Amino acid sequence: MKKQMIKDLRIGDEVETQALVLEVNRAAFSSPHRSGEYFLKLTLGDVSGRVKGVMWNPPTGSEALQQDEVVFVRGSVSDYHGPQVVVSDIRKLDPEKVNRAFFQAVSERDPAEMMAELKNIIEQKIGDRHLKALLEAFFSDSEFARLYAEAPAARTIHHNCVGGLLEHTLEVIAVCLNLAELYPRQIQAGLLLTGAILHDIGKIEEYRQDSISFDFTDRGKLVGHISIGKEMLSSRLAALPGFPETLKLELEHMMLSHHGQREWGSPEVPKTIHAFALFHADLVSARMNQFIKIMEKHVPESGDWTEWDRFLERSIYIPPAEDQESGQEY
Image 1 (cartoon, rainbow, N blue to C red):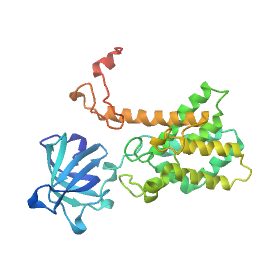
Image 2: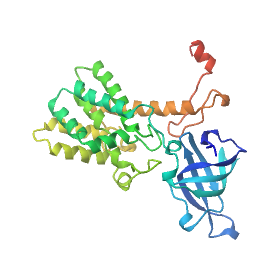
Image 3: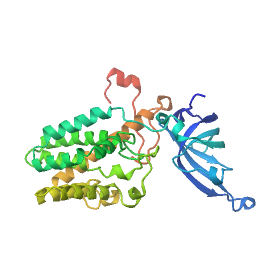
Image 4: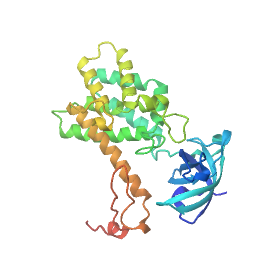
């Protein structure tokens, strides 16, 4: 049976397809005659998108649904504040026997090509011998390099695909290179680039490697990638005697402040020009990727505006295709 893609589901459609359980929550019935019973609120997804779901008579016991499971779903699409699949039947599938390409996005860029680009940057752009030794200590570790190349940069918001961390890092590096050229007297390019390369290393332990939906590890939930990354940095630095204290302090601060604001998860706000530059480069890469993903999912028939995005807190205007093709300014 041909796979129905989530993005193609429309209100009124009958559904018989495979889906990934992204979220599953039990909710109690409000009706007195169903007191003590519950139904399921679901989020189902594949590489094309996600959709809300509801199941009034959910399976129990060993058949009870869990997040990150691949299932076969039967039901219909109703309208409840947008499309919602009313699930009539659901069955767990063996994850080893499903096509992961339907459920786990992969970077459009070749991972080997991206890793070669990163290593070339380390070789050509990092002049300080201490910084180069630190980076070589990380990337000469084949297991670290493998995880770094395969990890996502996030679970849902940006670069949430296999190879997403590496793709995101190269974008951050590109922005940092431009900032270093703009402010050559104030910015040490090698230091900024080292911070860019290492700022998200904690993500290789934040997300489960065996999870199709890039679910968090317990350590990821309890400690978070910023603190994990700081620990990984400290461990490598401890094995490099004679590493300058000033460089160590700068790198630690860049790691701890790269989210920019405490309410965004940073233990500290950027207080050096390198940390400030890294924060903005990181933000540009993430926000641009969010913007592009929303634009790519937009259906032109629905008008010139996308749906409201709760992360960006806005809709995005996309001019008609004929305006873009004609070169019309707007």
